[in-house]
Amino acid sequence: MRIGAHVGVDNPLGAANERGAQVVQVFLSNPQSWTAAQPHPQAEELRAADIEVFVHAPYVVNVASLNNRIRIPSRKAVAQQAKVAAETGASGLIVHGGHVTKGDDPAEGIANWRKLFERQADAGGFAVPLLIENTAGGDNAMARRLDMLARLWDAVGDFGPGFCLDTCHAFAAGEELLGIVDRVKSITGRIDLVHLNDSRDAFGSSRDRHANIGAGTIDPDLLVAVCSAAGAPVVVETPGNGQADDIAFLREKLGR
Image 1 (cartoon, rainbow, N blue to C red):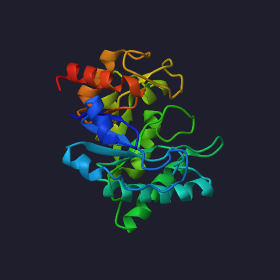
Image 2 (cartoon, one colour):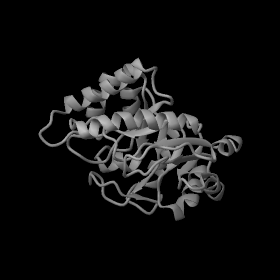
Image 3 (cartoon, rainbow, N blue to C red):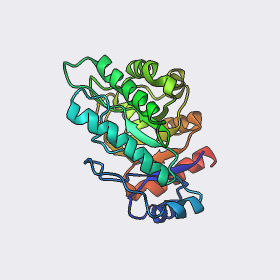
Image 4 (cartoon, one colour):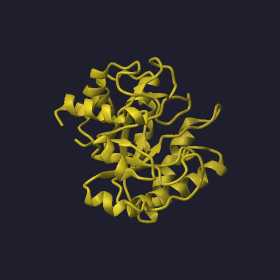
């Protein structure tokens, strides 16, 4: 089990060294825009340093959307981000589950996810594994609650997507963290990455506000238990000035 952090794109190797991180997660483009991703200039150095890299897709990506102006560029962005992630030596591309708007049928959003995989399969598949991430809020979200996640996996599971479990998102969505790894794996069969985040807000708040371990509302021992049970690489997406302490805490508790 490798433990690391989401870091800035400018100098991920330096940030990894400062934090004692064995894994880094980065954006390869502006997360709030449709700007194309670019290969990272430190990719070769990161590989030489035995640092595992994950890339997070921009937040604007929503392949479930019924709006053509969002869904079509989202499909293109995921394929382009995956291609550049591969050129950067990344182990996977994390993509939020997305949502449909109020009044839309969630089944159509699920169908749009399947179409993404079907179309890319015709083009030879994605250049790196896609890891679908659970999200914190939204009544019509594709991966907020586990019952909807099960519907999504029924539609896309045969394409072999990966799964990224975010503890803050699950907690904010009203999913109990005790036993969540087993419940998720009973649906997806796997957890490929853990976003290990405390939450600034209460259980079931639907608010996605991360906190450093012990500074939020989630029992730190419960966070450790999730990591231990998942047995996957761990990335903290917590405030940067506390990431080194978060990593050190997890490493001590997990004996890593």
